[in-house]
Image (cartoon, rainbow, N blue to C red; front, side):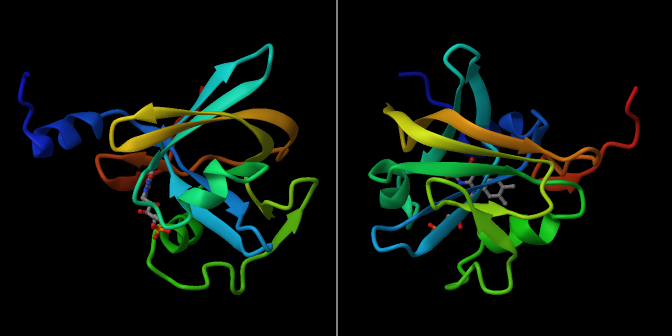
Length: 162
Ligand SMILES: Cc1cc2nc3c(=O)[nH]c(=O)nc-3n(C[C@H](O)[C@H](O)[C@H](O)COP(=O)(O)O)c2cc1C
């Protein structure tokens, strides 16, 4: 097997600029959960599918893998604090956070560039991550705004948009 240095691997992958999302769901019983995720991708137009990749060690894994659905909240450039909170070890990540719920009960964070509510379509193995596929059931987008970006382990903004 080809051995790849994990630091170099991480560094090389960091050269791919991404947006930032907070994926939300809830535990059986209704406790909301949320995780900052940049491993997000559109997958299919018909049916409308998206995917994200979740580390198997994520504390809230069960809420996404065995739940009925989840929401993907795409962060705008002024929402870096949300990315930090949902990537932290903070116990109650939702205290003081403004959100509503739609059909699934997953938190729809306020002020995002876009929100997608999904039903769980499939879960695939992906090494130390799981690939979670959702079918988009409902969505909303802001009229304007710019994205929060992540590049080489740092947050970034778009300064030119043609
Ligand atoms: C910008 C950014 C992107 C991230 N992307 C992912 C990701 O795609 N998948 C993932 O599993 N963790 C990702 N993380 C790490 C999780 O957000 C973090 O480990 C989270 O706290 C895990 O939740 P837990 O404390 O409930 O285990 C990312 C963190 C940051 C700051």
